[in-house]
Image (tube, rainbow, N blue to C red; front, top):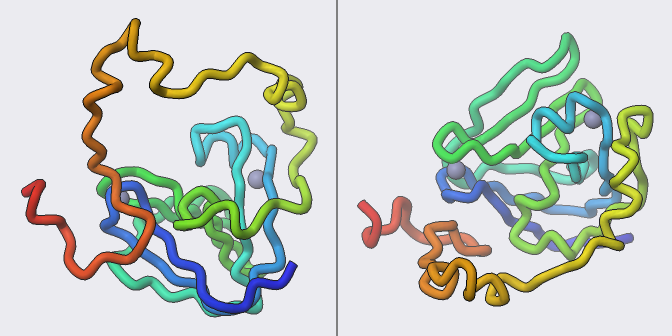
Length: 161
Ligand SMILES: [Zn+2]
Ligand SMILES: [Zn+2]
């Protein structure tokens, strides 16, 4: 996998934004219990920035030291998990990238913590959001306050504060 160029991203509210320039060659998911907890998820998708250049273009993460070796960074305003920082480098939460499809995962870690049903998620019935409209009509009138998937000139947006 070779993506030179630059990859931008940030948290859900947009208070923290980053850009990674260079080749992102190490995209993974981690099933370990610490990653499950840190992401509030069944596993954590992470893309290592090792060998590339990471810069924070807006705001800064708050951090939690989750072990003697690792620190987890997140947005203090909206809570989005953003980093896993260890002695061998910083990895960014894959879903926080503006284009998560650009760097698909190639390996799984922490498989001792893997939840058994994870292997069967793709077999569950699936529904698009608009299909929920009958039971929950508000879904048709949702106005997103999520930061768009690109860098923006000003923050916070005038429309909200
Ligand atoms: Zn945020
Ligand atoms: Zn982990």
